[in-house]
Image (cartoon, rainbow, N blue to C red; front, side, top):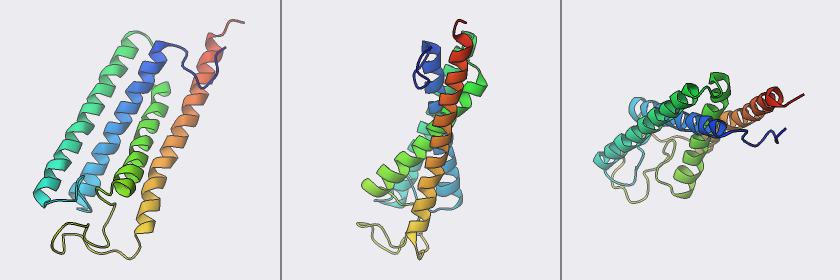
Length: 174
């Protein structure tokens, strides 16, 4: 029997890639629709004009759809080859969605400072008061954002490991 953290077959790897891509696409879609379009809290790129911000939102949206469609094509291929099913796929979706959220929250928000979850002040280099209402404490938003990535990532990793262990146990000769 293989280590539960490893991949038993190429179809397992393909299923993981499929779920991660789909999860990334869904997380990008939710971020774009909820935080960019409905709440108007930020754009994907907030260090320029509103026009540039809207174009950057479109690029993020297109990337999200590309990842979603690619993930679904890979899933269809795995299923066509009689590989692992949907119950094994959902943990990978959680890993992708949580990973995207953490990547966005840590690298894009904090390291590169391309945009924040919400704004207390206008970003450096942007003239005028901007469209954002000031908030008292950005830390609350940052912690909630990172937790919304960490939780599905951890749940997905644990569920993937458990599902792999069960799958390997069924394949193991007695």
